[in-house]
Image: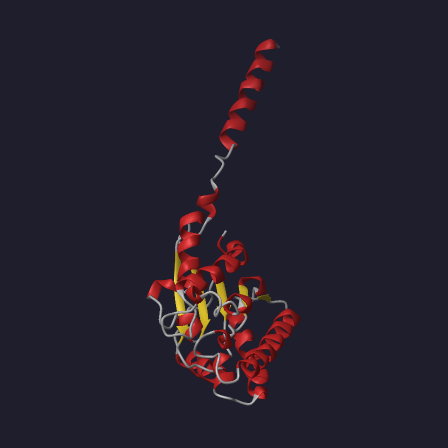
Length: 231
């Protein structure tokens, strides 16, 4: 009887050891590479700063260094683009079916070129819905960035900075309200750019666009919002 009990006990131990799974590390559950799609205009492409100085490149660098993550960055942006230009470009670009993270920053050229505001009201929702589609329908993986306020730069301080700021505020209010309405996060970075005259280091050498320093501040705010998409 004792021998039978001993055999049963040994068999039970063997069974447990055979089925026990070796715990996997967090890194083993990660993808081999993640993807990030940045949509916008000169503020996204990084006019007058180095290629890797933009907020999107700095975000990728930070995530890869601190989160042991490989990220492929795709930027669809060009200086001077309005919402119409971005829509036209997206209609001709061959993009991946989905991306792990998508950002959208657009509208300053609608204001600068004095397009009717109703155009933004019509086309921003289309662009945001496309951004959601690029994120595979996952709204938590999309972030809309507010439009910088270029009236606080040497270029924009004359002759009517108050009018510029007021018009851009209208654009940002609409973008924020619509984003939150559909369940997409909205990140305010406008206040950073509104320090441009008192902090010249925030303005690029062209006297208009954000500098690498300003983009770093954008990135620091975006980092925590982006992190869950790359875990």
